[in-house]
Amino acid sequence: MNQKTGKKVTVIGSGIAGLATSVRLAIKGYQVSVYEANSYAGGKLSEIVQDGYRFDAGPSLFTMPHFVTELFELAGKNPQAYFQYEKLPIVCKYLYEDGSSFTSYTNRNALIKEFTNKFNEDEQSVEKYLKKSKEIYQITEDVFLNKSLHLLSTYINKGTLKSMMQLYKIQIFESMHQANSRYFTNEKSIQFFDRFATYNGSNPYKAPATLNVIPYLENDIGAFFPKGGMHSITLSIYKLAKSLGVEFHFNCRVDEILMQGNKANGILVDGEKIAADLVISNMDMVNTYRKLLTKHKAPETLLKQQKSSSALIFYWGIKKTFPELDLHNIFFSKNYKKEFELIEEGKEIYHDPTVYVNISSKYKADDAPANSENWFTMINVPNNQGQNWNQLIDKAKAAILEKISKTLQTDIAQYIETEAILDPVLIEEKTSSAQGALYGNSSNTTMAAFLRHPNFSRRYKHLYFCGGSVHPGGGIPLCLLSAKITADVIEKFE
Image 1: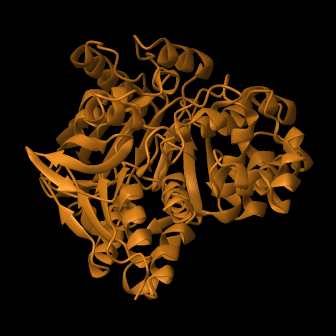
Image 2: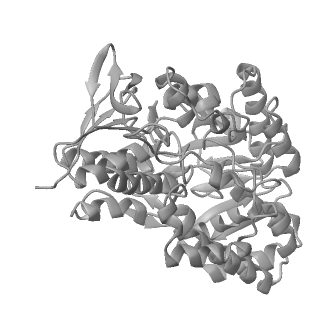
Image 3: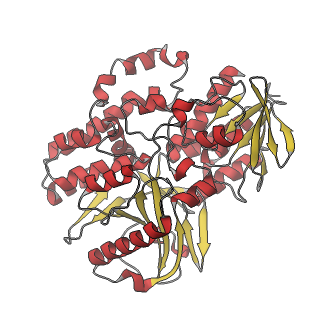
């Protein structure tokens, strides 16, 4: 029998990191119970079903699938019995109002040809850039992604020391935009690579060029489509957790983390005290302290840091098909810098926003009725600071429709037969993400990676954290890695 059997773990929240952490600890023999305020698992990685259309509600790009399948392998299960996916031949299509387009192919040679043919870039420059992106990943993987940055033991092994000796190569002291401008001459090429900053809610004109690691993950390792849509990631890990004995309690909002002295020893739910040997919060770390630890001292410096951007999403059932569009599509803003300036100022939405349209029915036909498509239509927006969102939503919808209609030379509004909307206020209500920020604290500073909250509490014993608001960051791959790090840290401490 596993020596950990008998220790009770309470996980607050069933986002992707909470699910993965519960699986990892159940495998180690802990008795795990998950308490979720909503009636469903998954947090942002959920779905909307409406009027014959199905939409993945949150994250829509799937990379690094091995972080998912690893969970099943650790449990001694066959991943394919739970979860299947396919590699995309096209990562994303980019469409411009001038009638031009760019296709981001998974195949490296095809991608490079696209840069040379469409943007007149030098082939060697593209090769050099992609090689640099891979190098950044190789240097940072061991230090920033696989281990806690907040433990001395991380820094006293050969692998870490080797990486630390090469940190000067990861372009930490220049912005993504500055680095991208050195490699490319065409503004569209620069904008293409600047866009990767949005993958963690950052500003490419401020975020360190270290984030230029992201193109390697997408273009070299690849982008994928889960056979059942993105929500199937949630369903598969939830099913795995249940098979391992993890208990789930839905519609159970945690009111307080209980402490005895400086030790977490349970939670309070609807007036009932539930004892636990360990407490893990998958809730945003700001709201964990502000709502669940109100009687205890909080790391104010971390909590007051600038938050990442948020999103405004229109889920549109479109009664028409568009063969020129793919699974992932981008309609770029003409003035990217101004768009990010307004996002950071937090008061307005740019009149010409960059629009992302995800159409899962391209790969999963039953997500929309016949001769129709399900459009997940998103723009990056400021996090919630008390703006008049009703007014901003109306303005944004008009701008989005005008932009897409002009580019596709079709009046899109006439084909919308159903609509749902997700804004920063609703994001915070549904997922407890502080200010509706998608990725916790902003990554717009040089030291942002080191300033994220640890996966454990420095002040309180038996209290741990996982998810996009703590190390190593937001997005599905990093949330899954946060689960790994949290489980590893627990193994060291408990």
